[in-house]
Length: 112
Length: 115
Image (cartoon, rainbow over all chains, first blue to last red):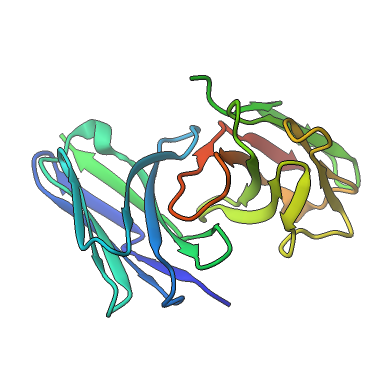
């Protein structure tokens, strides 16, 4: 079946450094890719998304890049802060179904 | 705008017992999703409703899980009988009409522990 691979599973960075999380998807027709942040015991919250007709999207310290040829997309967080510590999930919308396939998550720890 | 509401927040039951979860989506959202999130994993879709009709329940273990959305608003998810491996967080999400490029908004989840 269709799947989304996400790496790394854990990531520790020093405050102020950048963090990059990568995802690879299998459905070449997927055309929408949201990213969710989930703090411990809380709901997943949408932080940024990208459509297949765009290669990059930025929102303040967060950016997402998409390479449709290689079927991968990445989340970039610059100038990380302790409050960025959370689990981040990527997802790909399965074409024609409006269903999301989620990655396995990345636990980001920003060290003060 | 109020978010997706879920209850209860926590539930502990013994195996073979029954349990039900409730979800109230964002007002006006036609599409409702139930996900199962096992510890350390991403959410896995169980069932998707469009208004009061089922769009996809291919991942729902129908021998023990059932869900309904009778009036196209609130939804309930039931497990009967529960197994140990059902221990997970059950997340409800909603979107405006389930179209392409549309964001899904999640509720806080119900954390289920089956003993």
